[in-house]
Image (cartoon, rainbow over all chains, first blue to last red; front, side, top):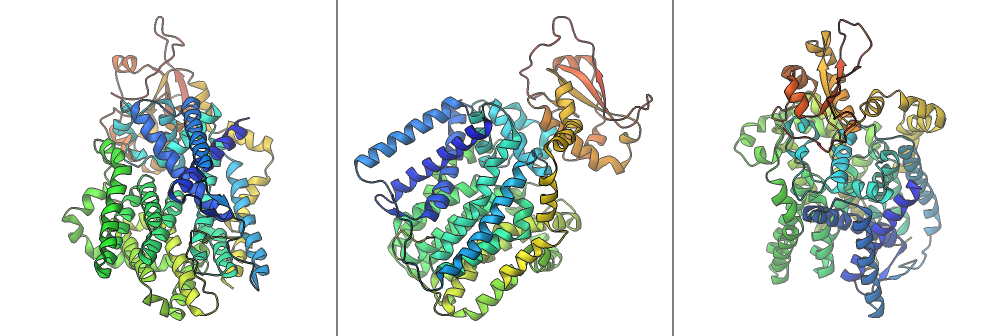
Length: 464
Length: 156
């Protein structure tokens, strides 16, 4: 019974996402991948933020809250159906091309990998240290108490290990599942974690299909699904893969905005950046970097629309996450407090630590046991498909990746922990956040190699 | 080629896939038995309604070797107990790891225990009784409060 109600909750999330997509892209055609990837990803982010806002008003996640959201969503869908604004399902965006039959093989590998991740995750309760100490603990708190009057737990320094100031996307989505199930069952509740984590694969496929044919896009997605680090962290109940998933959406739509300057792409870039910022503190930095790149390419183009785009990005981001930024301002910072340290002069004095950090990052990237040949392959494809660098969106993605890795190196440089202990423990997890950018770059450079290039101008960019 | 290579990585005996598969193949009964032996889950059942105090004994007060296991135990039991609390220090003392718990040496008086609805004590480390740890000790219920539902979830 708990499994059924948890599945209904995930269905509601998908429905919310479909509604939001229909609002952004009225009367558009959704492919299967958009329906099963983009829609649920937007739905998850929207649901997390909604539950947070409702909790601020004084209502902890409950069946009544979920029922209200469901009724409002259905009402919205009905109105849009009447106005003929609902997105329609289009199984294939483009015709089946020569050689596409081979796509079945990577598709099978991808599905097998994802099913295995799901089965394994659901066969045990929360066991990963961070999963119960940080994310699972907060999910329990948020299930019991609304944020209207801040729960005492958030100001109790003896719970500092749970990182009191961490964003609450994953805890709220998990609390929503507990509310739907009517009980705190963290084993079944891991379905939410599996759901969020495996969404990374269709989100990456979506970005790849923008420029790449079916077969190479499916192969790159299968590589992602079979990565040892993916198996290590998917479905365990942590926020790293959800962050990577939202980040994938944000950089894809930032690149599309830079390429085509279409408002729906900017809206989606804002949404995914806001979701990422509400998932982990790293997400706030990444959202800021996204905005800086949009602004930078606006300068370069000298187009008024691009300027307005950058202003709209920051306004939208602030509007969506303002409640979180204001509410979390009074929370006690842990001794890590990377935000304050990175904004202080201390960061300059710690720069010599880069001598230790950069080589460790490079070594980790070439760790075949963790990444296979992913990073090396990305470099090779960039080398052979160097002509792609002439395209602004590819250049933008390189800058995004560079700033992303630089921000993590800076965070390591100011950490209070012993680097020799911290880096081996966390490096693979942090580099996982950058994997969508690496795979997009691999794919978009690959597209320049020859016949694998495609360009679809309308909304339907993903397909099976 | 890269795809074949990552698939091959998952076929190695030491791969994540193999480890997970071994766990998934365990019978449900065995998994349930393992979970029942998880001290944190057992404690959550034993604690009933009240909050719990974590007290260190013997080697656990000073031996750095137990820092890691102490931290893990505190985090996991705090998670399992919630909305009841496991107190290892006052609310104004930072606890990030087992070392912090050792440093604080928390030993509150009866009034503090009463104010925080603490009804039992968990002893971590070997004590004079020489029993296995974590060892469970119930505090004597106060008049009219035995079995009272607590809504306190933290604070000072």
